[in-house]
View (cartoon, rainbow, N blue to C red):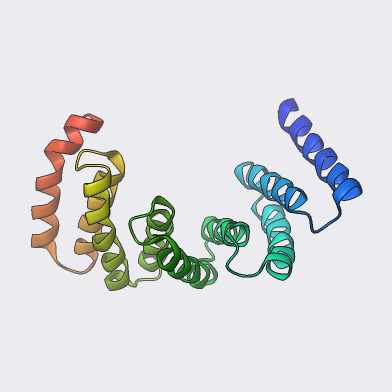
Length: 193
């Protein structure tokens, strides 16, 4: 626990040094604040992390614009904290906007786009929007299978998510078929625990 206090103090020092030397809108300062917020979120200090990220997001939006990669990454972090706090209705629109931008900029196959799609699919599932959830997972699966292979843990996780979504949509036969298809590969790759 002593190391956590030291780390938090060091982040305060780094942020203060950046504020003195480069000003409050400098990209390095903003990145240090995002890192500090991420550390606080990982320590269970979600409200404190969210407050800082929202402040950074406001500065980034004004300084760099909505489509800058730093702004989008901070916005993704805000959405992740909203999700961790159970504030899914606030996270979903942010994720939708980030996904649309990533897809338009990098394409659906890009790892960053796939990551946002997965998080957005989870948000849709939490909100009971299973059709939207399924569409995202199914579209992503083709890229995962091609890029990473059918035996990759990320591909297997997406297939499992599709199976669960089938169940939630009442498509039990589809769920059973898919999960039976995936189980041998999953046991081979991940073990049978």
